[in-house]
Image 1 (cartoon, rainbow, N blue to C red):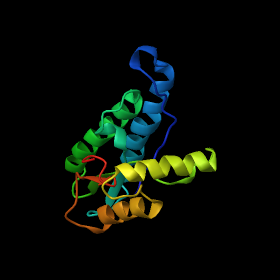
Image 2: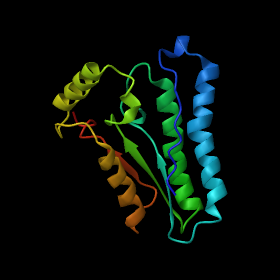
Image 3: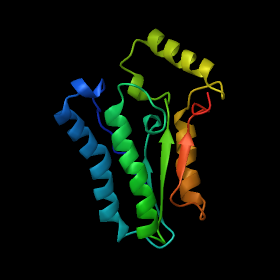
Length: 161
């Protein structure tokens, strides 16, 4: 089972943060993911998997990303606890950074390309992630029997840049 609950997390400095919107985003990303895992756990065979989705903001300190950082950190910590509690079900989390997906489709095409080109120039891998890169992370978590409690980073080297 792959859980990719998303939300529109409000950005900006904590002092000016819309806490109601932040709570809604947190509930969607973190609590609803846990609720889905809780409901599915009794239906998954031993050795089966639950794989959550995290994000780059949890381990790269970026001003204005408090909500995204907090909700993904909660989910990453929960993954490790659930890996122990639900064993022999394996629980992991895939954590992508900027990925060239339809989520950027509302941007002007030239601005979007400039953003991706600029990011790629700063990354050791020389490219931003593609959807198939993230899919490969999920497949790794699902297909590798010795992987549980792991964070699988799909970052193009951003943490070492």
